[in-house]
Length: 127
Image: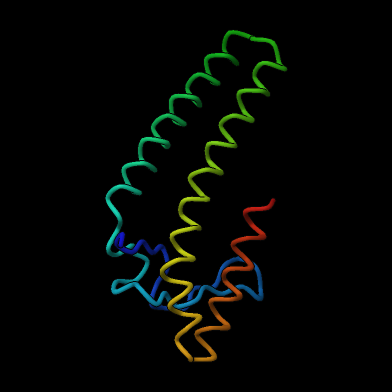
């Protein structure tokens, strides 16, 4: 079984919105630090992000060269989809490990905090 990845903390974190908070990660040992990162997932995400970085540099060049707007927009959509792919990988792992552990903990406050965090994360991802 792959190792765990967590981007959550052991302490409550309040974002800019008045009712938002982050759940305590059931997997984290250190605050705001991923623990037990699956090396294959990390490598895949880093490769994707490097590819995306190259795509963004290509977009900059297209703008500098006054390329056709529709062509640039098409490439922007490609970058956005690639970023969504990284986010899906991270979400899948978070659900399998941290969220599942918190929701099965039997601790009502921990479960509710994780549920709220998941909803906020999904809503943010849908924007």
